[in-house]
Length: 110
Length: 114
Image 1: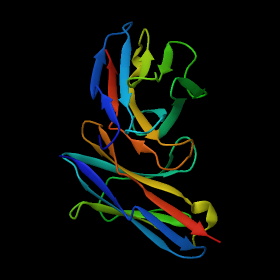
Image 2: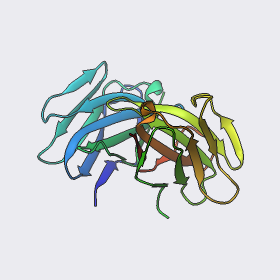
Image 3: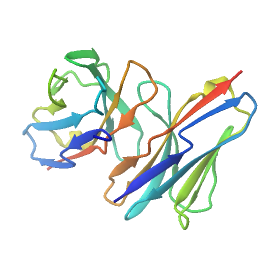
Image 4: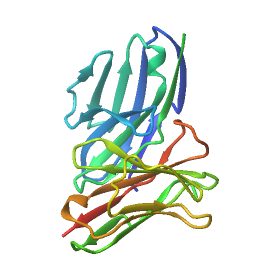
């Protein structure tokens, strides 16, 4: 059965810390992996990854995919309180079916 | 019931027909959210319901779309007189309280209009 597992489920850090969020998957006919930040009504799209080893970067956030080991990481450097949110990982297969992980709840304390 | 159950997983409708998408939230969750995902795009908020009440429908088209979450039974997203542009994946999420955290997402219903 296809599954997407995120770890840790929750994380508490202080401003300025660097965090690494993990997403592992077992999906038939993998097509892409997406990261979202959820703090409002709708998750905000962060990254889409389709190729192994190519880092995507946006400001203090970066992400990379390993299709051999079937996982992705999301890094946030110099965290700020505004980074507090739930970070969702989702995997899309060749049928464009999308499966979400349970999310990682990140809390950044001042 | 470990998670949010959506059915059907795939739905094919001809133009002009009605589509009914069902979402059973996590047991004990009384807040349901519907989203639409277009290919290669992010999730777009449609409607937020609490048992028997629509709290926020600001993201839902005024025409042809409606949603309900009755006291008993699943939440239903209904699309009347479907058009090709309605083809998308529709996701449902639930939460135990009116909070922006702790959502659990379902596996979605993929609607194809032919």
